[in-house]
Image (tube, rainbow, N blue to C red; front, top):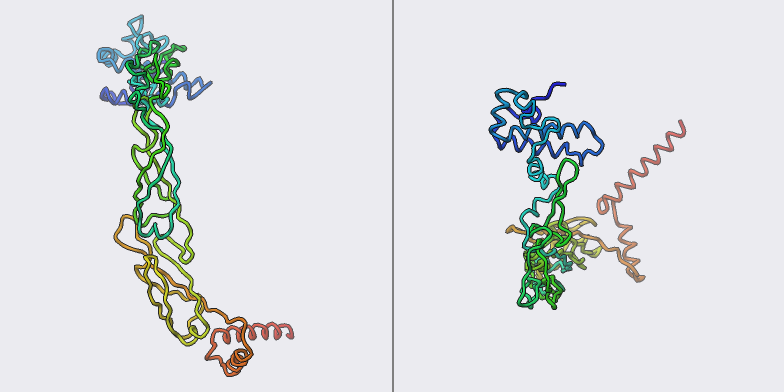
Length: 380
């Protein structure tokens, strides 16, 4: 079976640069790597094919020979090792892409033993008024801080960490497995690259201790339920002098006895007497900023009518504007009437007409027409 063109195997043009060839190889290797395709013979063959192609094309001399003579340049023991498709330095080549395949790129070159501290979460409940005006709050949190006795090194005073003898300070060790080399976290130093012979007595070698800290949190006006505030570097201290994590404060807003929030708008329901609804009038309502405003209602107002107070709502976060406030009227029906009140209402009802109660008159008129239609339909 004829060998596939090396350029075609890597899906690049013959004029491709060294960087393009390397990028194409890494992408192809990530797709067809045997560990990602267990038991897939085609993927294994493809993996060997692209490695053979890359071994040639990455080397300027081999590439020049291939461009001139093709596959014949490496036949009859001319230095390629064509039977397996791998050159002597394949372990180094594969090590370059191993981090991309298994997400270990961030561990290359560690050896200081410094690890970033964990992020922390703090749940805080605030009132709707606080969400409107913003506030500065003090919180107390137990967290890990740098050990003062060893200045975060984890080593006893007068000593210091030393390079791990197993991994020579790299934090990882290599193992040959089949036709490729695996890199694993060093089991002796757990990837830190350093070991401590004499750990600090205060922190047991971790470089940090647990303390309760008081922090100031500034809550901006307009925050909503679920808003997250990040305090960079206020999380747990890093291991052995590593950078600290972050503190995330999650806000929840308690319910308000008068207002209901919808984004930047506020809503409230205000009961009005039957007389005010019939004759018109006005009433006073509070606003979220602690003030008051008057709402004028026309005569004959019905339950459900909303009045908009522009700009009386919540601030819009990071914007110089406010939402609106909506006041919904609820007409209250009188209860526990006296005898005189009942007589007056009965007299009012006797004197009422379709003009004074157009909605109910219209509704019951339609009901009568509907029922008459049913009755007439049944007699046909």
